[in-house]
Amino acid sequence: MKQKIATIGSHSALQILRGAKDEGFETIVVTTPRNAKVYHAFGVADQFIELENYADFASIDARLVKENAIIVPHGSFNAYVSKADYDSLKTPVFGSKAILEWETDRLKQREWLEKSQLRVPKNFHSAGDIDRPTIVKYYGARGGKGYFFAKNEKEFEAGVEKSGRSPLIIQEYIVGVPFYIHYFHSALTGETEIMSMDKRYETNVDSLGRIPLKHQEDIDIDPSFVVVGNLPIVMRESMLAESLEMAERLVSASKKIAGPKGLYGPFCLETIITPEEEMYVIEVSARIVAGTNAFIPDSPYTALRYSKPVSTGRRIAMEIKQAIEENKLGSVLD
Ligand code: AMP
Ligand code: AMP
Image 1 (cartoon, rainbow, N blue to C red):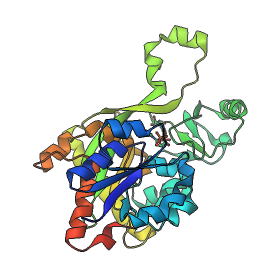
Image 2 (cartoon, rainbow, N blue to C red):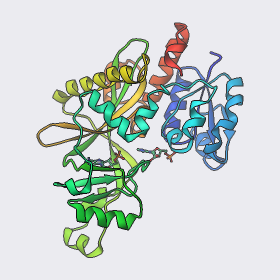
Image 3 (cartoon, helix red, strand yellow):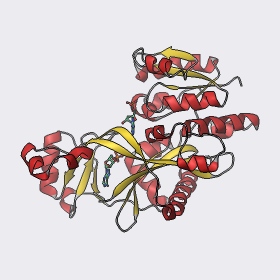
Image 4 (cartoon, protein in one colour):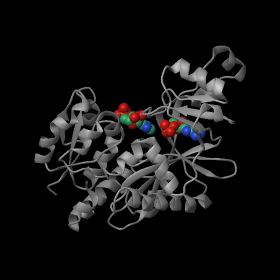
């Protein structure tokens, strides 16, 4: 194949590049000089393009076009490449550009989730309306940095004062367990697959249970949700049908809001499941999420479906390869 698979060296690049090589593609990693050693060490990249700053990603666009590269985007693209630069890339990307603004704009995302008839936590429009425990979130605070809790207007105002920023969303705090469900929607077959599931390891909220409450009160810890790792999980089997239906509704609504191609490729529903077995969706990611890294080379779900080890990274390469073979690249690239 003359096409090469390229991505930024961070987030989920190891499995994207490994999966591409397993399917017979040559691979390119775009990385900082410091991170290059990771991709050397694991032997997943055939070519290295070094960039000091990922914000300058657009400066290597022409070179990637010349290399016949296809970019597989992941969380570092959202975090470091501006939307204007990303939208204007000439190098084809695997994933819908039109759906991205429905992911990154939290108000639009909410509209998309509601159009998909998914259960979402209540949002409070004004701090005066807070009548239950809430989690207060910031624009662009990806990874949960700076979120705080507030049970009432007074706590809300104290939190805002402490952070010195103006928050965007005051959201009902759902008491339950998190499940991040990873999916893949094939534009070639129209099928949505469950790939794997993880829960995040967030510091310091995941460590609070290790300190007795009595001492927590003494040392005044503010819970924080910064993600630093991921743990694999599987779901009670009788809940899988609902998980699939939720994703199917999300894909079908995406075609109404973002054009006929809609959402395709890997995506994730971040859910919290309550003791009543109600699944609340707190966020959608319209691309590969890093929780899939816990499933190299495969997951319990992909092991059931495929006769070879298939990670989400490899599933992406399989889709691109099939599109090349069927002369349908236009259906899976933006
Ligand atoms: P990085 O390249 O590691 O800075 O990550 C890019 C973006 O993806 C950041 O917004 C991170 O918060 C997010 N991210 C990175 N790793 C993970 C992970 N293991 N789980 C969830 N989100 C992640
Ligand atoms: P987010 O940035 O929306 O992905 O949220 C980061 C983390 O905050 C999640 O992984 C959850 O642990 C927590 N979280 C966010 N929203 C809620 C909610 N409505 N109820 C309970 N926990 C939440």
